[in-house]
Length: 471
Ligand SMILES: *Cc1c(COP(=O)(O)O)cnc(C)c1O
Image (cartoon, rainbow, N blue to C red; front, side):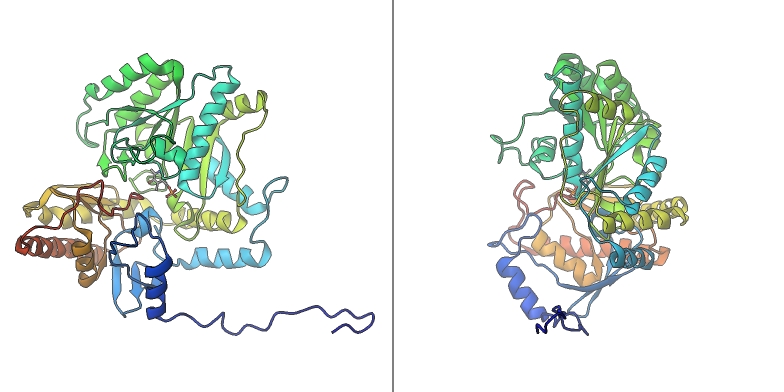
């Protein structure tokens, strides 16, 4: 009401509860009708389970079931779900500043996180670019490498080389450096840049290093260095391309070769960063500093989306000293204060925990717990590295059959292609790990029996299977 000099402002109604929540039936209906899921179809529905809440290593479904989580929501929830320390830090920050544009403005949460990242990552990575997701962090890394060579007066160096069977994200740029066969290049071939690919290293992480692993890399560098801006690799663990573990010596040698041929090295640590492989960053296994490093996934402990691309002073200085004099990227939500706060709290929590002991403990538990799976006829290979356990089957899984079996068993595992794999929270207990690995064994046994009883197993080839590439 306007009453003379006294302006009365509209005030929102007092909120006691945020709003009335949808029923499980409503959620299910809306989801099936309107919502895309990762690599999903509206016509071939695979089951989607509605989550009511999650805490620690347990996911609670609306149907009352509780699932023991083996996935850490794709590498992210390393302290389990809803870690109080991070949640409280974020709530506190939300009272003060949830978001502000990063163009021309800065803030304490970004400064604090940057200080942490510069200190923790391999020495020499001094400049940090924040973005919203892993794929964008990879695009940013590629743009940095390309702008670097333009600034050096070598614009022909604009292609990126990647390893076969790699995965770097789903955006148009990141997709171009994913494996050309499984990475959906055939669908978008007129839109994505034709990059260069070299052979996947075969020497196992713990075995002897075979120098033949470097032959193809060396030959491609020799022939193409004049047009190559960078080599991008997932150090030690290739994730979504097949959960492949390889020898750190390959990374050390690749770094030297890249230097010899004037090609930058981009380490995509989006999956491997923050302890998962037993080192804080997988590059440490090879004791190298890449020229550019991408971080994402568990950067915020699975509470919010945030990614970072770090580079050396040499790269930043070169870009900034030549036309156009700036690095050409700037997301709207760049350096979001809530996400930076979540990331800092996540890192504090990780560093104050006995994380190295936890990774070793989980590695042992997964190794012994999954050993029984080797006896199954359907299983081709079982491998463990750090807090990552992989059971590779002979055939791609039939998701509509297999996924509900895991849920019936009370565990959350999301296979893709031929791979049944897990990367639990670092906080998971030994008892919970035993339940998880026994559950995997039980489910694979029942799955084999179920398939054995089908006249024609309903198996789709990997390229057409509704698989999730985010792993
Ligand atoms: C998941 C992942 C990405 C992409 O991250 P998004 O946040 O899904 O865009 C890139 N690289 C690697 C190695 C990944 O595991």
